Image (cartoon, rainbow, N blue to C red; front, top):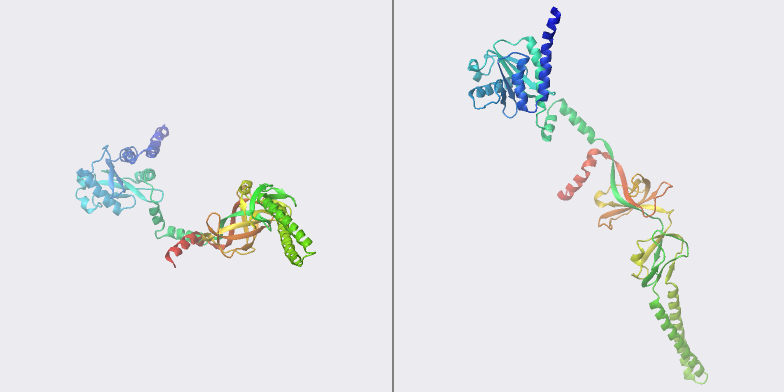
Length: 447
């Protein structure tokens, strides 16, 4: 019967401890947590007075047992604040305190405000940083058993109080990490390792699949394109018509040339008849003969020009140009480029490496092409040549022209656009990260 009667008595302190820890975790504010610490700790350990000290700012008493709110101007609170400041400066761990161990400025008035014995209980977080303290006071000293129980409950109080700590600014966190000690050495060692990680120096450049050794189709003479017979990217057999020029002007010139030839021929015939009896007409016949030959040449030239107004494909291939409407009805000059005839099986990659992103590459290096039409596909190509001088692209950017041949048998479609990744040598991560800022700084500073 004795053991059954003592069991609830032995379990009661444990239940009180668990209830206090739960109340501390459920506190919605620092004020609510301070009220729990100052008043409800009494259910675990008897005391007459309690005060909660917070380290924020210069330090302040935030809660006192028996009072719903604290008045910082009250004499008791002013004395208690001075006492806690001295204890916080002198003691970092749990320490019994009395009038003799109190700070000099507060020991004389100890008997007026507190009982003979007190206990200073710092409230720390998981890292051992102190956010405040709990001060308990009574007439009798605290026993070893009570100190052990208070150590457990103040550990829970410290954990709950740390949850209300405002987020520390990034600068302060970095400053704390770089304080002399093991943590700083680890951080600096980690930064050094990260800075020395080797990385491939790469740059991204716009690229397009272009024809290799295409056949250039030019305008055969000055005129206006009357009709285009093919569509962009259309396969064209050899001898098929590509486009034709307007023949109105040439037909008129041919008609004039024919009339001039007929006139010269009649003049020559008359001079030949008169040359039989007249020596002077014999001399004139040679002149008219020359004029007849000249008109014959002009007529032949005009006829040959009419035969060239329709341009045909000299070899098979795919017609490469922009749009039919861009050329139909457009005036062209002799030798002006109209379209290309390309072989789909003979393609290469043309990339435009911006001058601002220039890296050291050379013929034989490998680049990777990522087409915009299929983001999951990639093609490897080997650099054939890099232009010596930069030229302005269609987008108004100065860039070096890089030509590369595809290594795989599965070639991309002609005219496909995308992004090429140009890779140079291996460099430390620090150089890779600071390369662009250093380039801009040199341009401004001039070093």
